[in-house]
Amino acid sequence: LGTIPETDAKEISHQLVNLGFQVHGPLLDVNKANLELEILAWTRKLPENAQVLVSFSGHGMDLHGERYFVSADYSSHTIHTLEQTAKEKCLTLEWILSRVHDVLTHEGLIMSFWDCCREDGLKNLLL
Image 1 (cartoon, one colour):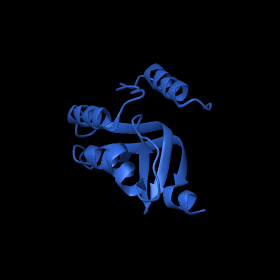
Image 2 (cartoon, one colour):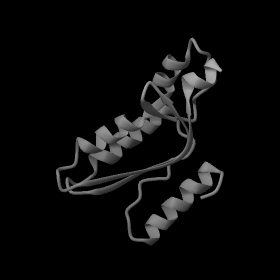
Image 3 (cartoon, one colour):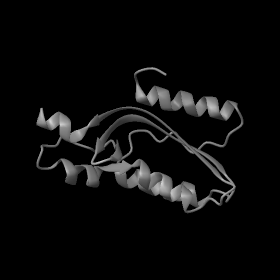
Image 4 (cartoon, helix red, strand yellow):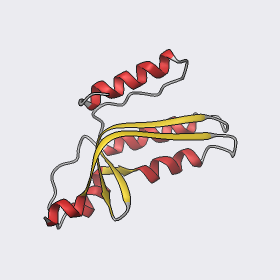
């Protein structure tokens, strides 16, 4: 993979299609609201025994033990607004995986792959 998230997402999608997988995406430069809608629509279509790969290329951060994926509409933050901005403009890996878990039975399989630089949001603000 390279250093440009959009190119990486397109390449991963292309390779999965070439391997015979059904691909929903890539979703590029989406805000949190649209990303949530896309994930909810996509998970509703999953069969109970699906094999699912959730892939994310872009920016991320860790905050209080949660892994956040930064959406396209995320703006800067200060130490006072970090937590609120993260909740309003980012998705957590746990939220995404819980949507998939809601659909799958014990026969389903979830894989998660993320290609993002992650930072500890509080650590970098406190330095």
